[in-house]
Image (cartoon, rainbow, N blue to C red):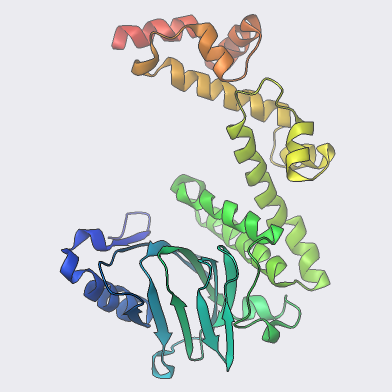
Length: 323
């Protein structure tokens, strides 16, 4: 199914159990990916996938039962590279007379789209694959020819940041315009080149663009996960991400907000959601203020009124009236 935003979703749950693998092999493997698919293990089969496109990049994410993918020479139609990560431990690949296996869950792999290849996943698991033009990578990565069909450890920091950054794309509104889509594509390419081993010039560009964007997103996610912590501070966040407090402050300043402004805005937004939630109307204002990280109720009331033009009590009264 293709959404109005151009995101295509596919699930075998939409078909009877006895048809699921055949549909996955024909409609997804042969028609969309130009690969032959076999089941790695007998028994029930299930799979789901989401496909989306950015400028110069096609993305595939999802999960499947154990499968074997083969790309025969006669079905090769492009000179793209395929960078995948999230492999389950023991997943196996072959290309160019090379063989490699994932030593840990989350390891990554770079494969040539223009040559025969085989990838086997014995166990059920999730995977993300990014297809991009070979020219977008070869000029920016040292000794790229040595990296095809080689294990890439999943604990490389830039790869972990890439994994987190891609969650942004789950929010279609954040990449709804052509300009934002191009920016996201640039950031993804930057993080891939850093993971593979960027040249000095490419690393300089990537660290100033994609790496900073991904770190900012990761830090924002961290903040959202700790809003109820009264001790949340730039120092605590910086320590968790192994960067300096000043680096964190600069990242936020470049985005147009200070760290303190971002934290306050997110706490107030969460309080607003709780106060307008019909299921939360019996909770006290104090309890809600503490839950989102305010230890001073007077400050909470003042900040809330400045942001929304009404006090928390006013909003609570409106929510009770509606319910």
